[in-house]
Length: 273
Image (spheres, rainbow, N blue to C red):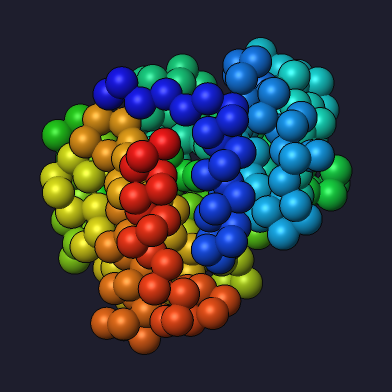
């Protein structure tokens, strides 16, 4: 609450995260608001080549109202952003697809595959955030489990050319052992495609859930510096990075454990901005 970065702030943060060694720096949704569009315009000339290579533009699969992915304005905005990687969000829960999105299960799969194929054909690396994946796979109070459909969403993205499918605990209520089991199933379902994890901290388990996903085979962890994010926050990379490096022996940074010496200053820099 009350956090709003200016374009100038975002450019400074992106440069600092690139220097630190973050592989992907997701910088906004160019098709959604003028400030994010301005960021990508300025990034093309104000950030160095190392930082620009790490930038990610965020968006969603094509709208139900778009006849084709090529006709979708926000997908075209991702291409026009000039970055090398796009991350698009889709529904990966049967109940969320029919009751919230108001689409058929088949049309949702088509929106996923056609959007990924369009962006890949345009030369972008594509990551797909599978929203509500764990809720759809495991079930809960809102709806019964339908793991086959959640996995079908991951498979559709991978088959269309996604580099990474990212499993989302969108409501932040999943437990670590369930995250580990569901992640292992997704890893087995999409051989040859990287699996990532995107966790919220509503249950205070975002760090634990991220580590559980890595134990199950995930190799991309989305999060934020200091865990800043909507509601109670996103997974805190300032806890996850050293836990992966020092406790689990996973290489996360180009300079390895030596880069961790800069972690405190990165945390404070972002917090101050």
